[in-house]
Image (cartoon, rainbow, N blue to C red; front, side, top):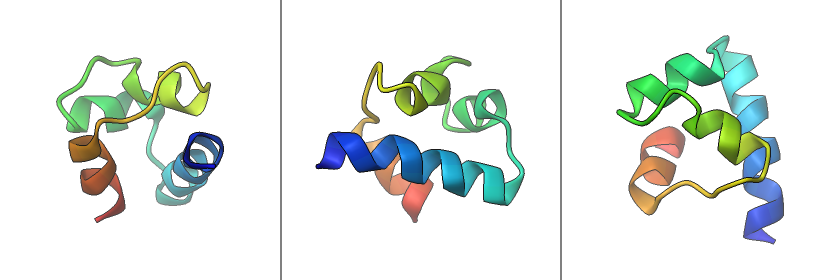
Length: 55
């Protein structure tokens, strides 16, 4: 369940805030494709990133 809902919720949150996937990745201190990989279900966020995004 977690693996299925995170990408969709992240994309929705990001677009609501008007932030690009690249900018969000870089603001987390990650590689520029980190958020894109999560939204495309290629990876999951680390717990630290998860908490930072949803805090």
